[in-house]
Structures are given as structure tokens and as C-alpha cells.
Length: 367
Image 1: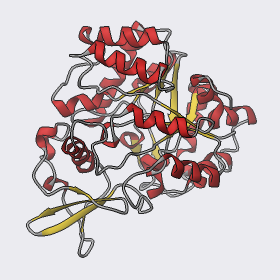
Image 2 (image 1 turned 30 degrees about the vertical axis):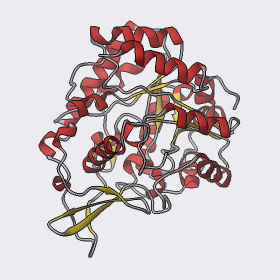
Image 3 (image 1 turned 90 degrees about the vertical axis):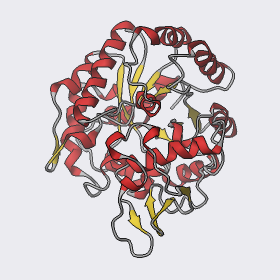
Image 4 (image 1 turned 45 degrees about the vertical axis):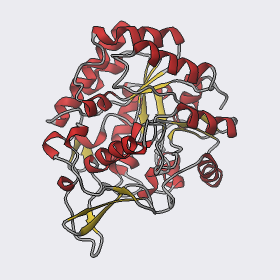
């Protein structure tokens, strides 16, 4: 069975996403859209725009850097804003996300069409912070969907007990299967601390007691971006030394875009260092990161896949897609065929592990 290790369901983005107000969700969206590499375009003629109209790019991690630009959630996968009487947009979602939401039945319909049996729902605050929405998606399709819990990263240091309780409830009452933690979200609130500092220990001790897998999304938190990412990798190493028995997943991959050199990916040894820990797993998600760099079937990353199998092992590798967002580049079926049809160096056992067996084992479901 194919098990997509990284997919999304999305609540209506013109609502509040379980923030205190729609305005809070809109601010997170504006920062995410402004910082994203998708090109800003002028609405009337498609001419290049400027992300600087949305945000002071010299301080891109902080919500304080946002500018007034009549930023708004449009339709057909677009976000729009107005500067000096001109309308601009960014195509963040594929146009098929017509009404700027993606409920569970739509994801399951795409899974049916592509032949995907199960999917694990991931989290990012600009697509909503509510655990109840994800839990309801799982309740609607218990044989098809599983989901990750989330607590606001910018609150766990100051409110560890409340944050632990939120995850506990989502897992033990809501039926979710692990926690996703995104350290870069702290920078939106000007919190630049390392997430393994002593102030975070009460939270992480509480999560360790729950005995659930932790899914870390490590991204750059400052400039220069590659150095910032590698510093996050060092933090992960220290964190795993403190919690050596916890099951850990590095989502999305090794920040592939930061390591493009010509027609290949080149990584420093520091990027591989955490995988000496046998409890660390890696998601292989190339199309969502590099779909505007290399064409299907992206043979340029084949050496990287081979290196991951050699260094880490297929039993610690996870296929994921980022559905539905990845459809701005590739179809669901192409995401599958990139591995199934174009990675003939994988044995049947290795293919089964990557395409579903590893993630099923981590979260304890049949595949």
C-alpha cells in the first residue's frame, strides 16, 4: 500500500484557523507568502512584482516586518495585494484550490485517483493551528488519514504545561499520531532562542512522557540561510542526545534548495551528522522543493536518493508529497512514479519501506 507520509488538509483560510481572530491568521499568511520563492506577479499583465511590498525583507522572519498592502486571500490558489493602485498576486496553491480550503474528502478523492491508501496530515501555523480540525478529518476517514498534533511554538517556552496538555488531548482524545514542531515559527514573534535550551526542557520532558514521534521541520531562521539551517541541525543533535530513545522525523528533507549546485545536490558532512542516530528518519520530498528547478522525473536527484539509502537506510526513509500544494508543479501520480518508475536501483523491500512501510511503522498502523 502507498502511504503518503506528508499531506495537508486545510481549513477555510478566510476564517480564523483557530487563532483568536482572522487577522492573526492573515498575518501568518502574509509573512509566509512574502517569504516564499514563488514569484510575485502584477495582475494586469503578469510582469514581475516585488515581495518587498508585503514585508521588510531585511527582517523577513518577524511578523513585525509586515507592511500594509491590502493583503488578502483570493480564490483559485492565489493571494493578492495592492500597491500604488496596482494589484499583484502570488500563486501559492495550484489553481484547483478554488475556494482556498482543502477538506478531507478532496484529499481522499485525489488519493483514490492516484492509488494512495493512506496519508499523514502535517501542520504549519499559516494553514491553521487547530488540532480539532485535523482530528475531525481523521475521524471522517479513519482508514485513510492520520494526523499530527501541534502546539504554538512561540508559546511552549512561556506556557509549557498548557502546551503539553494541548498535545496530550490531541493525541489521547483526538486520535492524532505525533507532534510536529517548527522552530522557525518562534522567530515570527522575535524569539530567537535555541529550542533545546533549559527553558524548553519542561515541554520536551512532557512530550517524551507521551511516547509519541516528533516531526521536526528545520528551516533557516536567519541569514545566511545555509549557515542558519546547519545551526538548526546542530540543535537537533543536542536535542537527540538529551532524548536518545525518542522517534524523530526530519520533515521535507535536508532543505534541498539550499544545497543545489548546478545540476546536482551537494551536502556538507554536517548535514548528514544527525543520521548517526538510528531513531532519526528522513522524508524524501523533492518535487515540492525543486519542482520549479528541475523537470519531471527529476533524474538530477537520483544520486541523492541513492546516497540517502546508503547512508541512512530505506527503513528510515519516508516518501511524502505536500499534497495539495505540490500540484502547482506535479500531479499526485507523478510524485509516485518518480520513485516507482524511475528508481530501479531500489529493491522491492527498499521500495516498500520508502513508499509506506517506514511511516506506517513509526505511527503504528497497518500498511
